[in-house]
Image (cartoon, rainbow, N blue to C red; front, side, top):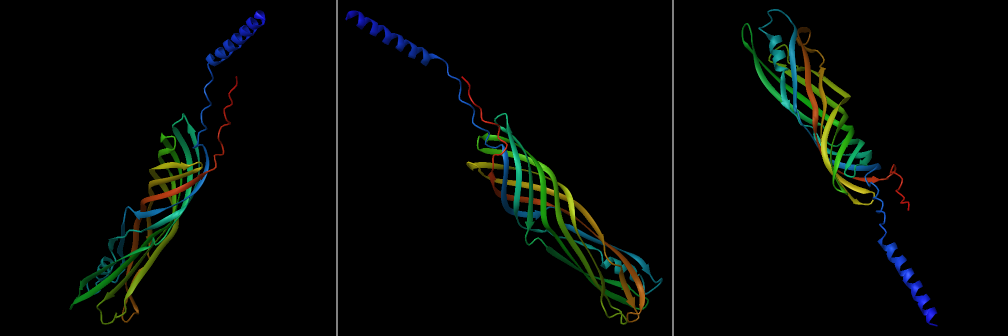
Length: 298
């Protein structure tokens, strides 16, 4: 009986010692969490856009004038068709984006994003009224003009590289830059009136441009992963689509009740399309492209 008790006690102690030894064996660390920023995403955005360089300029030179005709009529016609104004295309901007992020070294994120936005109420106008005189052989001739301009950016798209740092696992700050393109429009009209008795009708010219311009963009922002697969962002972008120049139709002035061509002016308008964008957006992250999960092996 005593022998059985001793054998049972020895077995229990052996099992206890094995359990204690197992508890003291170092355990491997748990696998790291997956990089939640890596993968494809798609989203929408909305904000405000306004121009940076707002000047629009029209210059006219006298290309033809009948010599000695009532003083410098051709020069005055050209001067009255020359002027500039400040015009700022701006408005609500909204659209969508798609991109891919890659998270590395725990706290760094690189990616590529493309977006396309429409701009509402972007067309703005400006006018300039001017008056002058032409010294004549017998009397001074009065003259006046009105110049009018329009300018707009109707849509804006970008393809940008992004590079960011995670302040926390769910809060990303980033800078970005790359290609920008946009649909631009501008027009110029000139109406003049000379105080001749034989030239009562006003005369003028018109020209415009409508094209897709390509340039560059750069900016910065912050993005917050507020739910699994969902993030919200705010960002600022500066874009520059370059300068444009376009010619107007010949500015022809007729005398003798509209039967004699007295002067011809050559007009050209120049302006620059660049601006600023502030917008907010929301993205859905598909998380495709995550690395395979780490499996601990013992």
